[in-house]
Length: 317
Image (cartoon, rainbow, N blue to C red; front, side, top):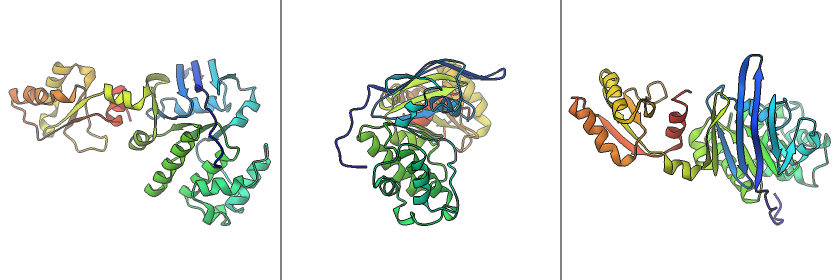
């Protein structure tokens, strides 16, 4: 990206008000209200089937919502207003390219379908996503991660004010994810707004300024990530699998049923139970179990995005 002065981002780059969408009798979005501040990286999270891709398709005019309003860059937007999308770059699902053309030639073809990109812009975005050395190679010989990076380059061709990315880390190796994080943070620092949907919670925790979490088409929580984490505390306790049912019942009486969930099947070792209480109450959690003859084999406390996400979505993956 050029070294010209960064543009002043709009106060609100993207917003939805009461957005609804159904497929037949199945609701996908139910009165969704999002507010994406300008010049930030906004992490859009939710379990599979929560409505994330439907939301993104509505935002870029691929499908029509049943009701509600969308604002893009401070102005109302409808599916008829295609010209407004010239200031929006998007990567939705897996990008499609001509496999027999090089990466550079694919970007030139894409650039020819709309307003011509600035001179040298193709090479600039290839450099930005780390593909300049492979720009002359046929895309058919690219790895999945390289095609994903080329898709991000295509979304950046018009130097958009708003970038909408659906699972941009798909196919990227760890080094590629780190490089993508740096690119997106750089864009936000230059006044662009990045709206990114992802299921990689640790990555969003390192990347995002603001987070919105949805489930069943409804917004569950939204706000600056730092504030959300400060408001969310947890204690994790590990017991033997045979003691887990009794331990959960005790902890539900201690903290409430909605504040306790088991982590078995979530990729962790079986026997871990999470309790949504302040980390300073870890000793109380341990005492409740010990008084009933259940002894913890592990005890942790803290704040993280994964715990917040699992607590809001009741652990639904």
